[in-house]
Length: 316
Image 1 (cartoon, rainbow, N blue to C red):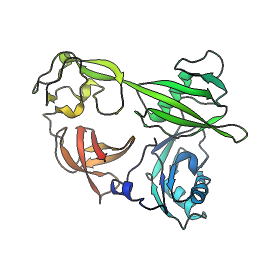
Image 2 (image 1 turned 180 degrees about the vertical axis):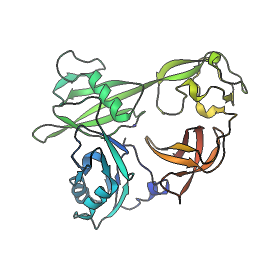
Image 3 (image 1 turned 120 degrees about the vertical axis):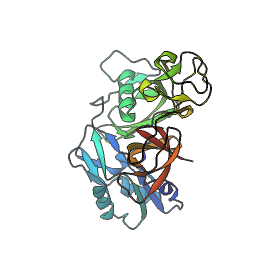
Image 4 (image 1 turned 90 degrees about the horizontal axis):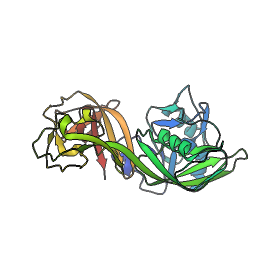
């Protein structure tokens, strides 16, 4: 779900153009049973600069306040470090949430080479799948191909996973401090809304011409996953029987008024991020309109309306 990037918004994604710039990206949510202190390198993606600076930043102690970590806490830790003179760009919201993973406890050594789990007392592939779903906030199903054996110790990286990626490297740290990687191939599946009969351009979507089926997903958010998202919408093109319904190929007759609070989704390569926002113009699903983040009155963005609650910014 890659780390979930919090955007400042588009231009900063291109700002790190020199090798001297260090970019620190912290997701909106991290999943950990520990809610006290964290190493910055365990909750953030740190890129750019030189290896010495990255090591200093990765080792910084970041203190949580209850179930949150503040941006000011991260900035203060950087300012007091030997890396304070480096050119640093920090991408994170004012506060990030700390949530407990679905699976808690230590990981123990086990062997696995397919999606089937073992029946012993060690971590099974099914338990690892549940953990990955938690890290990605995925409401569908995930199939795994585990390349090797699950290391002993606790999972320390990544703090989040972007749904749709074909693979991820998990890193585990044992009691002696040794870090071992585990490569996992991922297949993401989700129930999507599909045409139960041919739908002609201009036809309205009704309960009688759709049904749900599970399919492999590589680009989350493209297909409708709930009838409530599209009932009453009109097809902009012909949709064949059995074809999954793409939200962008539908139009709503309902005008969504400016001032409405929406969720802004940004996608950059295989990564995605979200923030609360406000519509600055009226529009219908599929229209491109101006939108701004709720916590930033100065910056406006161009976004496509997905539905009455969601807009999407695409970063090429």
